[in-house]
Length: 69
View 1: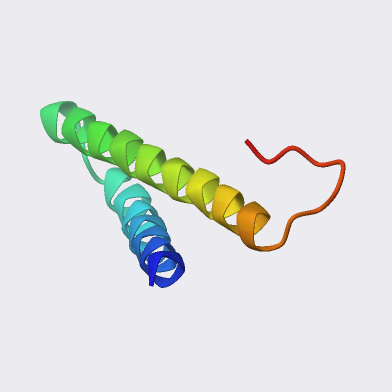
View 2: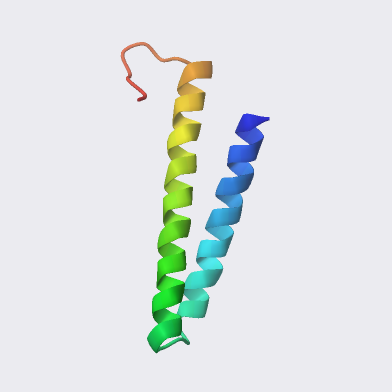
């Protein structure tokens, strides 16, 4: 369940990030800045999901000699 949830959040954040970048092209001023901050938050969410997925996968399928933390 955790793995599927992380994948769902990662998919959502990536899809929303891509849409936000497309939307960013037509914006100026405050709207541009606000959208840029939202995209930065989405990047953070995606990065966290990827790190958690890496740790999860390393716990399930350990590879000797590789540190996953």
